[in-house]
Length: 590
Image (cartoon, rainbow, N blue to C red; front, side, top):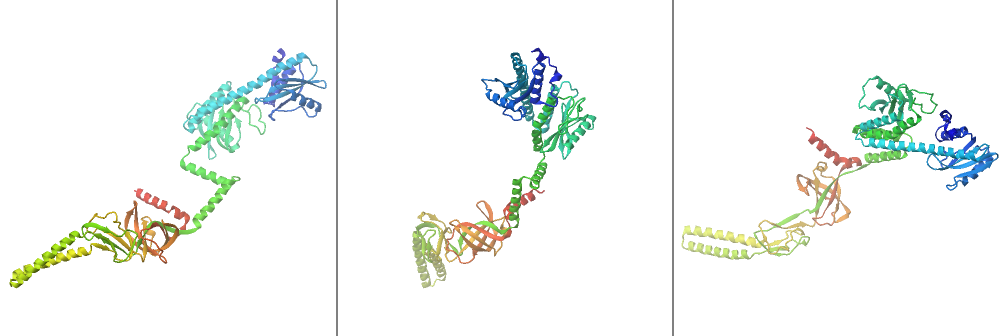
C-alpha cells in the first residue's frame, strides 16, 4: 500500500500520450513501483476509440483473453487464466464514458495471493481516477451551460458578449490562479478586418493603447492564418463560421508565451495554461460563437440584411453544391421569362347588365288608385295590350259634372244670341269654351286610365299585383317595357381603367345565369359621366353584340372583359398595385 502511494509524480507523466491511455499508463507504472510487473494491457468496451487488444503476434494470449472476457459478468467481475508462465486477469472496469468494459492484464511471475490483492487495490485507484475525471468534466459542462444561460438572458448582442467574456475570464482565473494579469478580449470580424468588440471587466477600450494594438495584431494574425496562434501578444483563437473567421478571442497574460515548440498540425500550447484550461476556453468559445454570431446578424440594419442575403443566395447559386437552390434559381428564371416575354391580352374587367336597345316607361297619368294589375315583370306583351287599370270612378263623376256645366254654358250662349245681347254673348261663349276644355281634360285622363304597352316587348320592371288599391302619384313610373328585337350590353367600368377603354374595342362576357357560355361584344359608346354602384365609382360603357345577338333577357347581370391591348403577365398582374402606389406617392409628395 505504501509503495503505491510513494510513486513519484514524475513517474506518472504519460509523455506524448493523454486521456484514457495516459491514465492506464500511469496505473501500470504504479503497479511496477509496487513490485507487480505488467507485461501488457488490453481493454474491451462498446466504444472502439477506447478499446485496444493485446499484440496480435501473441496469438495464444489473444485467444485466452477472448475466452476470459466473455466470462466477465456483473455477478463475476474478476476472472483469472494462464498463458504459459504468465497470469492473465480479466476485470470489470467502467470506461471513461460511463459504459461497461473489461480490462485485461498480462502479469509476469512470481504470482501469489499478495500480488492479486495489490492489483485489486490498485484497480480501485484506477476506477476512482476515471470517475473523478468524468465528474470534473460533468461539472465543467454544467457550469458551461449555466454560463450560456446568463448569456442568453441578455437583451442585445454586445451585452451578451460582455457577459460571456466577463464570466469566462473569471472562470479561467479560478482555474489558473498562478497566471497573473490574465484578461480576455473579443474581436469581431467585419469584411476581413478585426474590430475590438468587448473586453473582460471593461465596457470600453482606449483606442491606440499598446495593449489594444498588441491584441489587435494577435487577432489579425489568427484571422489571416485561420488557426490558433500564441505569441507574446497573447493566445488568439479564431471563432469560425463555415470555415471563415467570424470573431477572434484573444487571451493575454503575463508570461503567456509558447513553453514548448508546437507540433505541426496541432494548436500551439498556451504557455502556463494547462490543457484542461485550454480545453475549457475552446469549449466556451465553441458554444458562444454561434449564438453571438446569429445575434449580431439579427441586429444588422435592414439594408445589410438585404445585401448579405443577396450575397449568400448568389454564393449558393454560383458555388458548388446547393442543387436545390440552383434548381429553384433556374425555375425562377423560367417563370420570370414567361411573365415578361409571353404576350397575353390586356383586359379591363367590369360588371355588366343586359338592357333592351329600345325601352319605354309608362307613368301614372294622374293621382289615383290601382284598380287592376294585368301584367308582371318578365312577361312578353303586345303593342296595345292593357297592363294595368286605374280607378276612374271619380273621373267619371267629374266628367258628368263637366258635361252639365258645358250644357248650361251652351244654353246661356243661345239665350244671349237670341236676345241680341253682345256682352252676354261674349261671357257665355267664354264659359262654354272653359267647360269644353275641362271636359276634354277629364276625357283625356279617362282615356289614359288604362295603361297599355307601347310596343311589342317584355316588361322589365313594375310589379303591381301585390299593390292593387294602392295609391299612385302623377308621373310615378309604373312599367318599363323593353323591345325584344335587340339588346345592348352596359358595363360599369371602374374609373381607374376608363382611360384605356375606347370605342371599337372588342371583348367577351359571361352571365351569372350562364357561366359556361361566353359572348363576344364590341364597345359602341363611352359616356363621360360617372356613377356610384356598390360603393365603387365607375363610368357607363355601352356595347353591342359582335355577330348574331343571343337569346337573352334584359336585366341579366354578369362580368365583361374589354380587350384594350396586349402586354405581358407581370405587367397585367402588377398594374393595379403600381397605379395605386403612383397615386399615393404623388399625393404624399409635398
